[in-house]
Length: 187
Image (cartoon, rainbow, N blue to C red; front, side):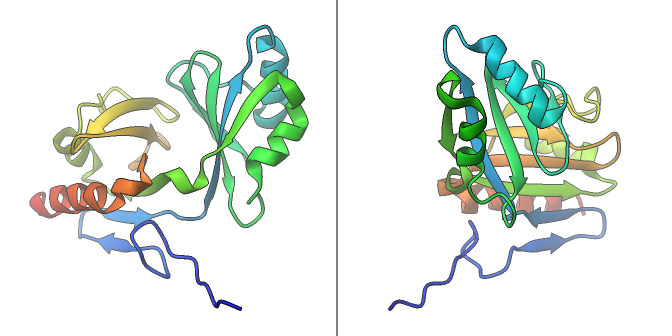
């Protein structure tokens, strides 16, 4: 039998954390992800399922943070759901059982890399890395944006100094390099 060990998107056994005096970049590999798309004619039924899971349906450009399942808007009648991987490894299956044929679910855990960026230099960092209007964003606001020529999703976690960035896992090293280089340049 093979002795396989899971690796993070950056290829490590443990998630990588880069700490600067003004900012921290943390590889977050502890999330299960599932895309949720309402099928035509079942939009209201899907919204009812989402309300049951999240308490409210995330509207355009918004995220809902709940425990254990959170979610954010991706497009018309489309959302991404997140939960702790340790307790919700089969998130897509769990939600599919809730909504049946009303929605299309897709496992996304292996498709995305997630970085949490925290620190008091966050505004300057964001203004250098992407075009998201970070100074106008409130906690729970989301934006699709380009970072280092990669299509990413930026979520302002709270009114404070924390964002979450989702990018394509296949380009995790390139995205991390862009984040690391920008944080280094702020010093």
